[in-house]
Amino acid sequence: MLEGGLRLSHAIHIVKTFNPDEVVEIREIGLETQRLVCFQDKGFCRYYVGVRESQKPCEWAYFSIETLELLKKYAGKRMRRQAVRKYAKEHGLVRPKMLRKVAWRLMVKAMPREVARFVQSRFGELKVSEARYEDLLSEADDSYPKYLENLKRFIYSSSVHEASS
Image (cartoon, rainbow, N blue to C red; front, side, top):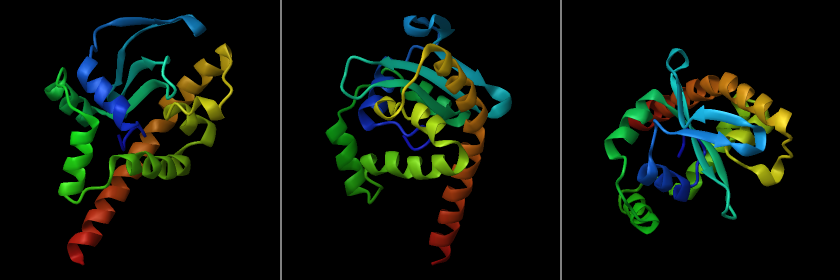
């Protein structure tokens, strides 16, 4: 959730329905692609989620290669949002809905706001034509590694700070 700014419901959906080998067609832009595309040299993957019919759409999920390994481990598992929220609360973890907000604040420091909106599927705030969609996909692929780098720096600097306190 933190790596891609995903909503909890979308993260759960991805775990439950993970199908990396599927080829999907995104009709609106005439694009055919593997559902999972990994950029090993850049350290990340993007996964086509394709949730459009709901009030909260989610096109792509961006995450690190390390997270892909976790996803493979738990793929097909079912979980309830309430159980995840309860677990976070009981263990003193950041509430799931706050992760999206934290991700947004870190993303806009590493990439243009329009690209961050695209990565987080904030389409209500974004007007995307067919040509612009492909541009944003490329820009997101180019900008995302910088976000991951900043995120790792933020997490490790926060951990060091907390450990020394």
